[in-house]
Every structure is written in structure tokens, then in C-alpha cells.
Image (cartoon, rainbow, N blue to C red; front, side, top):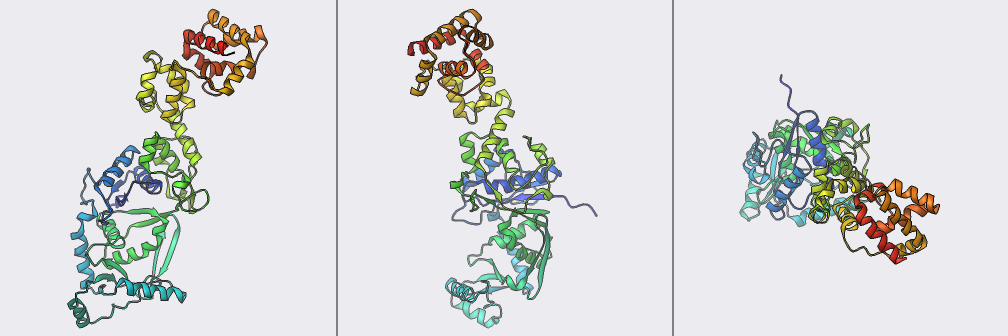
Length: 471
């Protein structure tokens, strides 16, 4: 028999901007499928008509493409298993509803929400898990007709077999076993005729030939129900794997207060997509190497065996670390474009390459580049009170000798520092600090040799004269 092609999917609901939890799910599916030359499919689960919007659908696609995670099957790409919007697949769901009803594996339920809520409350009070009591399972045809005549619109429930076990091997968590007595008959069609997640998600995975379903562990208890549906319909059951959830530093569910943002917000802040990818790829998954890697490298070294069963902890500092690594790894043109038009307007064309080389280790976001462009090329340099104190402590002679050194040796930091050591006997912090402050109004920053070279002889002398006047 031919080997079944490997296909994984990402199936978001377009009810908001895509956040880091969903983004990591998309990434893991894309990494694995790419690494084994499989198919990464995008499916839009837009059955929530009140909250799903075209704007969110478009934005999540833009975000995935920005991250470098194109799909080989789905919206705008096409494929043999569409439509790729659940809102357009009702005819598929209806066909399988008919099969289940004909086999007496599903039945209409006329219970009201109030009645169901009361039953759940009673079960919880008696220490039992809340599940449907099977009230409508044994209604006769005449009783059903009577309720329909009363104008009650039923839902459709799946008839869960009694006293059986649903077993499967989770490719992340290992062997799983669920007793059907704990599941209860569940709704597979709402009163308005639409399909809830439990049903349409399972039907779509099977009919769209998804081989592996990798999703958050909050879906683990859904899996036995979905397996029962597929088995009842004699549809293929994919392999399931449930990845650990992402928690905040305090162990609570990840939220904005922990520093989590949407992908759109990260884009607006100036994050590099490959930096975000390098961070998320290690959030609940380990690599033998901890160096910065390309998407292709991350894909080739991604494996189910290295997925953690323990919750992942979001660390904003680690996200920044990989952002800095991305800045260092970027080529000059990419970095220049990322710095933005304000930097382009401040930095002289002839200084572009030198500016990039000078500030690269000192920028994390575009606004950092703007800051350094202003430091180096803005005419107005206003010293802070703390920095004025440093200049005054160095004394007028310090700047007189520095100006002499620049006049004779040019923008050569090594030669300038040697001159100051020989004439004034200064070294270390007493040499570097006042010189850096005088030239940049900063106590920390780019390497002094690069800073001096970037400013050039004319601007060096100009700033040294300003500093000397302040003394």
C-alpha cells in the first residue's frame, strides 16, 4: 500500500488577532510538516457567525506569511480538499448527520438550556462529573413528533456507546484511555442547524486527509469524543498529539499582564519574525543546539520526541534575547529598511554602512536606531545634569588635549587615547567616560573606536568644543 502523505493543519477561529499560544501551535505544525516534506494546511474555522470577521481572517493570514509560515493548502492557495472555510462546508456536515441518524447513532434533543443547567448543578452538587443524562435518548417517534408540533427546535446529540473505553497513543503525552461513561451524549448540531467545534473539526480533519493533529492540551478531553464520531462514520482517525499550554511567569494562564501580545502588535513594535520564531520554537520544545537558527534549520531539527509534557513558561526577556540575535543576524539592507524613514532622513548617505556597523550591537528595536541617529547626527546635543557633572569633573584641560589629539591624529580613537594617557596620565574610566559623554551624551553605547570614526574629525572637534564650554 502507498504510504499516507503527512499532513498537518492550523485551524484558527478568526474572532480576534492571533496571539502567541495559537502562533506557537501554527509554528509547531508548520515546522514538523516542513521538516518531513509534508503538507501544512490552513483551515478557517469561522462557524461563530457573530464574532468571526473577514478582517481577522485576512490579518491572521498576513501574520502567518510575515512569520514565514506559508501553507501549501488552504485559502488563496487552493487544494483538492476545499472549501477551506467551515462556513462553506455545511453540506459536508449535513451528509454525515444523515448517516448518523439513519444508523440511530444520533438523536434529537429537546432539552432547554435551563433544564440542562439544573441537571449540571445537581450532578456537581452530588460530586458527579457534569454530563448529559440521556433524557431524550429514549423518546419514541410519537413523543418526538409531539415536541416538534409544539414548535421546539431540537439539537442533535451523538449517542455515545456505554461501558466502553476509547484508547489512543498521544504522540506527545503517550497512551490515553477514556471511559465512555464519563463522556455523556454531546451535541453535534445546534438548534440553528450549524455544526459545533466537536463535530465539524473532526469531520474536516478526516475528510481533508489530515494525518496528524497537533494542538493544545486543553483539547485532550475532546479527542475521545471526536474519535467516536469518526469511528461511527468509518472515517480515518488522525494521530493526535497535545502540546503543553503556555503559562505566565507566575504559573497562571498567559495574558497581556505577562507581556504576551498578538503577532500584529509584535510586528508594530519592530520584532523580527525570525526572532519570534526562534523563541517560540523553544517554548515547550527543546533543541540540542541553542544558537540562532534559520526556519529551515529549526524545521529539520524539530521532533515530537522533544516536545515537553510540562507547561511552558513565557519569558519576555528570552523573547528580547532572540530579537537581539535576529538583529545581529540580519543583513545590512534588511536592517536598514527595518530602521525606518526617520533614520534614513538623519543619517548621511555616505555614512549609512558605517552607521549600521556601529549601532548594530546596540539596537533592539527601530526606535533604538532612531535614538542613535539623533545622537550622532542631530545638531542639538543637550547634556543631562548627571553628564554635565562628568564633563566638569574631567576638567577643561582634558578637552583641550583631546582637541589637540584630533587635530594631529584625526578620528583615530587609539591614537587619541594614547595621547591622553601620555599627556594627562588618565586611563580606564577616567578616559573613556568623559569622552563618551562629550561625544554622545551617553554613558554607554557603541564601541568608542567606531563611534569616533563615525562622527568624523569635523564633528568630533565641534562636540569637544561644546563640551569644553560647558566645563
